[in-house]
Length: 210
Image (tube, rainbow, N blue to C red; front, side, top):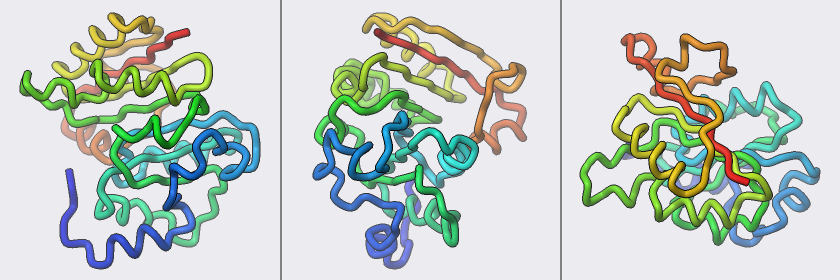
C-alpha cells in the first residue's frame, strides 16, 4: 500500500547511497559497475518497507540483492532502516516493474514476488506480476536458468500464478499452502509478520524454467 505525505520523499530517495538513481544507464553492467563482483543477483519486485530484502542481504553476503519499489514514499521507510548500515550487496531502484527490461539485460538469477497486489478483478488480471504481460519481460532480465519465488496470502493469486507459470513453461519445484509449517528457509516481510500473528497461512512456490 502506498504511504502518502512523506515530506521530501524524492530528495530522501535520490540522496541515499543505496538507491540507483539512473538504473537504465547500467543495463548489462550491474555486476561490473554497481557491485564490482561476479556474484549472482537476486531481485525483489515490490520490496515495500524492506524487511525481507535487508534480512536476505545481511544473511547472504555472497549474493547481490536489488529491491524494486514503485513509490518513493514507501522506499523512505525502507531507507530509514538502513541508516548507519553498510551492506555493499544491497541496492534499490525506484520504478515500475514494467520497465525491468529497460534496466536489466540477462543478469538476474532469482526474482522474488512477495505479497504482490493480487488484482482480483478479471479485467485487471494482466497487471498481476505473474501474468502473460510480465513473464516475457522476465525472460529478458534473467541470466540463464529462470527462478521465481513467490509468497502470498491470497489463494486466488496463488492459483492463477500456478496456471500462468506452468502454461509459460515453468516447473513448480517446491510448493506449500502453509509455508511456516515447513523447514523452507525464509525471511519475513512486514505483511507476512502481521499475517502470521493473525494465524493466516502463507502460500509459497518456487518455479524454474530452463
